[in-house]
Every structure is written in C-alpha cells, then in structure tokens.
Length: 139
Image (cartoon, rainbow, N blue to C red; front, side, top):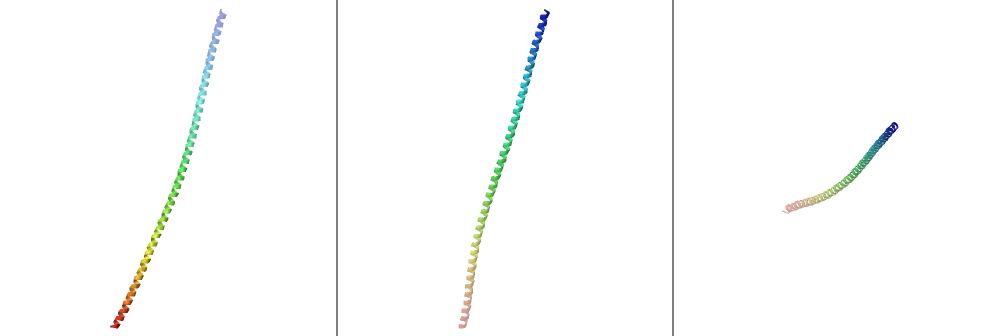
C-alpha cells in the first residue's frame, strides 16, 4: 500500500510536471508569437515609413518639376511680352517718323509757297516802282 501511495504520488507529480511543462511551453509559444507579431508590426511600420518617405520625395520632385515648368512658361511669356513691346515701339517710331516726314514736307511746301509769295511781292513792288518811275517821267 505504501508502494501504491508512493506510486500515486509519483504519478501525480509526473502529471503535475507534465501539465506545468505544457503550461510553460504554451507560455513560451505565446511569447514567441507575441514577439513575432511585434516584429511584423515593426516591419510593417518601417515599410509604411519608407513608402511615406518615397511619396514625400516624389511629391517634392513633382513640385520642383511644376515650379520649373511654371518658371519656363513665365520666361516665355516675358520674352513674348518683350517682343510685343519692341514691335509696338518700332511701330510707334515708324508712325512718328512718317508724321515727322509729313510735317517736314508740309513745312517745305509752306516755305516754298512763302518764297514764291515773297518773290511775287518783290516782282510786283519792282514793277510798281519801275512803272511808277516811268509814269512820273511821262508826266
């Protein structure tokens, strides 16, 4: 009977150790699973951070490209406006020169008319003086 008692105790201890070992194994498995989950979560977080960084880099690249395009468009518009301004100034100068030539021509015609009028006046005065002298001599 003592032997049976010792045997039962030994079996109970063995069973308890087996339960405890199973419990320890389960605890260890859960801990490893938790670590693996944490590691996966950390890797996922790192992956998201890399993706976010890549998106930021791409956005910056896109923004720089847009700014460059806008600057080029602005430069083209500036050149176009400068050409239009130059063309407008050339047209104004041409118009001014044509008006100046018309005025000069008109002045020349006016001066020629004045010169003719003066010459005619001088001729009349000469003839009047001449005729006046002849008339006086006649009387």
